[in-house]
Length: 412
Image 1 (cartoon, rainbow, N blue to C red):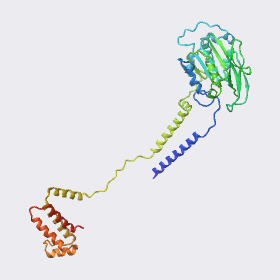
Image 2: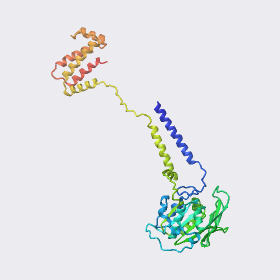
Image 3: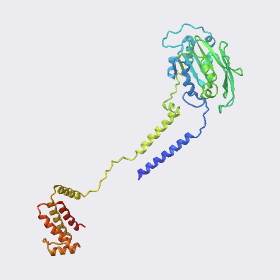
Image 4: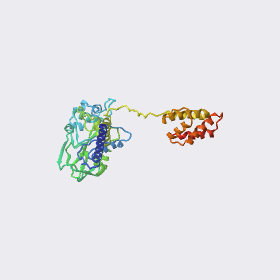
């Protein structure tokens, strides 16, 4: 009884759960328009599409995400470079490369984030990387003050309304003589002040500088205040040509990318972060949890050993008699069969009709006919035919069957 109630409750629970999941999955949900620049998410202002397509810009070269614990192996400091200020840094003449064979100086580095963060070691290592021949592009709304201080750059901001939806006006930007449409954002960051040795590479239709490029030693570093051009929404619905043109400005070399250069502020992102970043993995994780829960609920009841079914006892006497009869008929011993039938008949008469007389005479036959209600002439004929037949040496099958038919008179 309780088992049926528990099973019914579990089935009802999963029916309600399935209906709830289907209803939740089918109903419209408000879209998230916050800038996350998440490389895994599919929200409008994430960068899943860009980082998935980034290796196509550098054929036959590696494109690697740079984890925080690997930054120091790629970007490392040099005392000569660290001692230079911004002005001397931009005018410092290239010298012979370092002899460290583990340091690859021609690698590209790309950063796309809301705010570019770094510490002193990260900035010094980045500038040293550029000096040795690396090319760097940093796309962000805000930049670390240490980087701006080393390059002697000031950022200007024009505040505007918040980005509630992506349906905002567009502006024109100029890049190497070509014009592109660029979506406006909630604020407009631009480069207000920078040394004259730094090149202007992107200007909007208002005359504000949105992108600059500085040559340091053997390489270059470019800063852009338009990271939203790499978001999923802008690549799909605005103008992906500008993002392609900007990335194509880098040489075809091995490329690293990351969000910032904070060596000692590593943010661990475990397996669940990766799972919840993909909708298919997230729903697969939920289904796994529900399946495990269902398994435990359905196995709460203690399992019992199966009780075997007991069949009703069978009367094998008739089967035994049938076997014996078949044996007699197979041997054609009609004399023995008739004697046994007569003995059985006399025993039946004695039991059913209470005739204890052993001799079969007229009185016996009359009493038997009266008590059994069988015609007297039929009884006389049975005993007479039996006596005649049993004396014969050979009994035919027809005689045997005729006598057996008379024995059937007493079968009721």
